[in-house]
Figure (cartoon, rainbow, N blue to C red):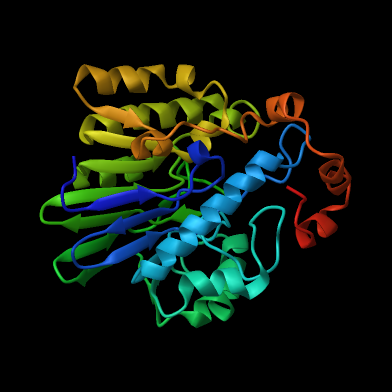
Length: 327
């Protein structure tokens, strides 16, 4: 599919964590997209299973190795599964105070979502903290919204901010990123949730990327935090994406539902009819899917943790964040 652009998923729902972190290499430059990874602290009334902690350790290792090679690091928005904070948190983010973030951002060109415009309150605060902490280690920190950057013959193009889901999303805005080299295009579309927004869909359709990685609709929140109409809009948007892009890596919110495949049947059928492909990040890498968060209830039933882990489980949130789980 792509001969000159190398795309490697480092962390994703199909690899057992919350993330879309991806490494892209061209003959000119090496790019680390959205270098964050998280676990959900409470799903089905349960903390992450030991297998989820093992997955986040593996992902953190891969991200650190990619960061050591990268010239450029990007931040599409300021959720912690898309950038790495500079505080200790072993429950959600697997971070050792400033050390983890420094390892990623130090001496890099860091291209970021505008911290002051088209941003909601919580992300504005996180963006301000990032600039004072992890961002201070960067060689260069530049706002990327709507801009294009050249590294040799490689172009890195950022969209204007698009909604984190529907047009009126309380979750704010995100940037999509296109990496282009020698006529080949990879489009990275995190947290667009389908996309649900026509504005977002129009940008993707105009790019016509050969490979797209996209965050699908939050199927696991349907009828609970997100109304069914918006979910269906996201699924229809996804059907259009698989028409315009010959290969689509479907990830993130959509895969937090154990029944995601049957709920996206129309998307797969649309792609199959025109000879296009839809894969998870794990499948793209040639690995087995590991939807650990969606399986959490089953994991605890079929693979009960040790007594030491159970004791850790019953600590308060503050203690769990400060104490590595015994896995």
